Length: 508
Image (cartoon, rainbow, N blue to C red):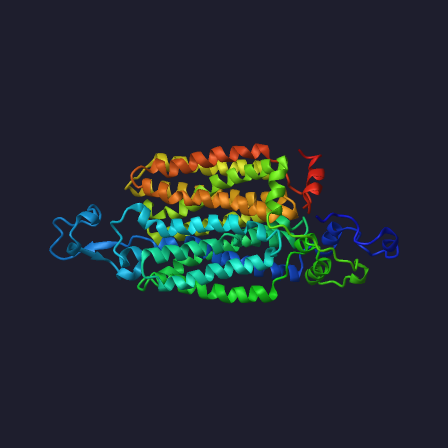
């Protein structure tokens, strides 16, 4: 394990006045600001969130049940707004557009049960869970942040591209499962890379930058889907996967690995080279110790460290419970848009646009917000709006629908903002040696909450309290676990478990 001891013996250090004696000081003095090189790296890394957002919510359009209309001479018993499509003769109605616009209409699954119709989406989230737990330790152990990000993004994109050749539901669901496995580590690697390449002053703001890209990915889907509305649903996967594959190539060529991870692995020279590339300033690297200590890599070392320390396990449990509650709202609200009775394109646009002010507010005020207080406020507000949305019920009047969509958007906005705070909070709670693993496990809890949403959304078509009501209750109850976590605003990032434990002696 690495520590913050001087990089040179004391007698040698005294010969050089400009020598930085600890790695933490080296990071703060060399890349504590935010220069052009760091800005380029932040933009490059953040773009991964664009493709992450597209693949996460692409099922809103590809898996939707298309609108339909009655054919001639059947209007006496066929009424699109009141008739059950499964109780009508197939010859009495037809789809408004081509049957290929959704996998449900293409493969005639409109009368299948909710489990079958929701299988591709559920497979994607289950893949996220499997990939998260299987790959979480790779970024903290021998693979690193950069290689895992490239591998994850490439896996997700290739699976999305091959989806164009799906011939049945099972093949489609299997490819969505593989895509989910690849997607699982993108968010955590991106956030950790962003925050580990800057000093504490810019940590929160740079971490929020990636979330803007996620919103852009989400917001691009209605436009792509609207342009391709007369074509097959598979075109959505084609137009979102090809740019992502080219992006992976650029990522491999230009992305700089986290200097903190390199230092923790004993790659001292590579760590100094990474800092040099990010600092845009000449560093007298000849003063750096010539000896590299290669550390033995244990695949499960980060997980063992988390479970060995009681304080770390307590923190991990707290952030995972909160992430679970936020995940139900964050994924459930957009995926359940079709139940609201609004235009699906406009509904997705409204929800995606809610992320933009959420990220902007978080970007501007994250450094001044106390993590615990802001989490409590936004989670409770989101939960109350969700409960009120359930109580409002289904109203056919314009005013009733307006109130309901307003509550739904407010709920989603607060959940987005709370999630922004939680991600930065989680990064600050754990040291470098386990940071990616802890962040990934918290993210998997969020995905697990999202994986339960299709079931609640399906049941919510009959009783809205089962969906919106449950979302509100869960997020309010889960955020109460924030009381078990320490406040971290303005604190420095630690590298080892022992260093974190010593620092927290004055916090806990």
